[in-house]
Image 1: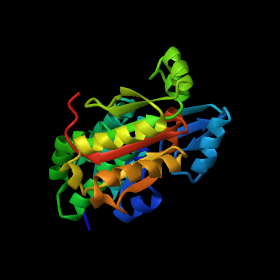
Image 2 (image 1 turned 90 degrees about the vertical axis):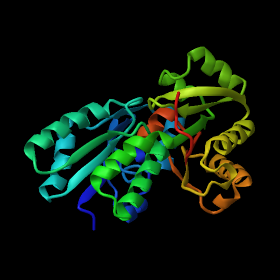
Image 3 (image 1 turned 180 degrees about the vertical axis):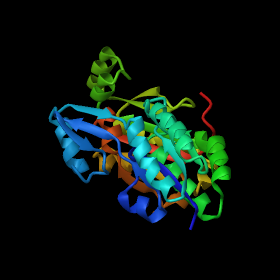
Image 4 (image 1 turned 45 degrees about the horizontal axis):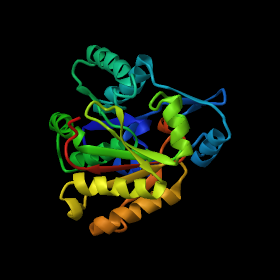
Length: 295
């Protein structure tokens, strides 16, 4: 058993079963739906399907991150048990959670000077964040110590590739990612933008593609272009979706056509309520290990 804890935010969008199986701990974000407060607890408080249906019906969402006191309480439990901690935070390119986590890191180092605590800006979100955590669990289980693991994450985190597309631009307009005019004409003309997460952890539109069928193929092509070993890729591949399983399955099929070693190995899961509050229903996101993000 390791003498340290690997930890993340609930925004890594793994299932409860995988968190438990891999011994990955997580701190909950919060969200609001139609004025009611919830914890981002992996669909326990409100099932994902109900959450996205409510969004489609026009109910408004807001999200909030843990504050430094929340992090203190969370980390203190592990440190009191004599466990060191390495904790990854949702990308600073889309959240300010790293600031609260860093304040807590200093607090905990003063309170527990004999213990180690590392805070890492994941520069990742959703399944890309989960991809990182799953790999960290592999390395921990292979015997890697906390210092070496911290250095590995800092060196390799930008190799977690994120590519995604929404089929309704309403929510990207609301979040300021797409202009109102672009959103209006995009929806009218059936345009599905292809976006990724860049080297600073920001969501960046990369292409405007007309029709869902074409953007699914373009997303699979991006993986073939960028993934480790190209068509011979056989590492983790995660697809997350906001209640559009048919589109997620279509993307998985397109990937397997290009990368046959992934047959029956692609993991498909929901986009959680924190990230989903901003992407809205109808978004599909692809995550894999590949070329380092440089722009």
